[in-house]
Image (tube, rainbow, N blue to C red):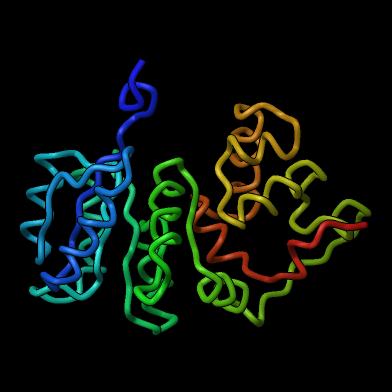
Length: 229
């Protein structure tokens, strides 16, 4: 069996305003045997049409395109291409811009100054269902709600685990907040992927969030996600 048949090709749409950067990204991505560039665009309207046409696995998206900032259009892109995962390729260092992109549905953010190797890892990670943040974004998420205080009520369970989470739910929430996929969480906790998904459903309900991205953004206190000894 050939290497191409052994591994599923990850199909990538490059959406970047600068031609020279698109050329570099295409060269980098197509140097990998399991990655394929299906199309390129420099503005959102063209990107949307190409995404619908090619159904890419990953959309590598620059936030500042030739037709303006595209953050507000991310939900539309995901609505028309629900199978695609969006990885933001950003030169913007504004914290609120990154948080807005995540809340809009992006699966991850990588800064343009990062190494090529890290960009490739990010593409593979978001395709595998994980959430990708570089160190700067992780720090931002932990600091996003500096005034957050878990509600305290009577009961030993709440004293140990906020929001009445069970010990298992708390462990799953910890790992999910770091961007791990359900499969990898299951491997670390020695439980099935289905069990992880069931636990996450309970966690989301108790915390009042709708997704893993919401978990990362909304429940962002480091002390909250330290497992008791």
